[in-house]
Length: 54
Image (tube, rainbow, N blue to C red; front, side, top):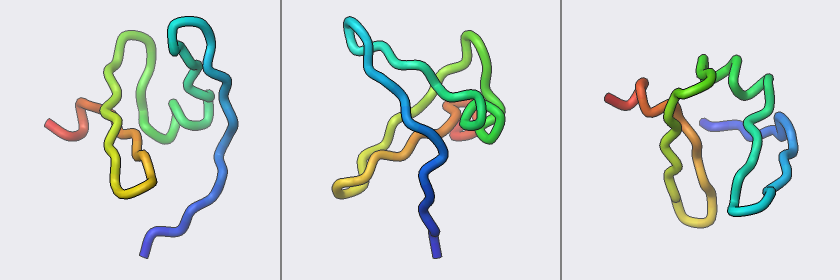
């Protein structure tokens, strides 16, 4: 069973840009230039490293 918790809060800037919080980057093992996949499941959005999905 998936348990949810808030890891961080980020702000959306001009043109829809946002910053991925450091703790989230560490958990996903991503950095500059890496791609993220955004998935919609009902009313929830999940973010994963695009490299891990391949």
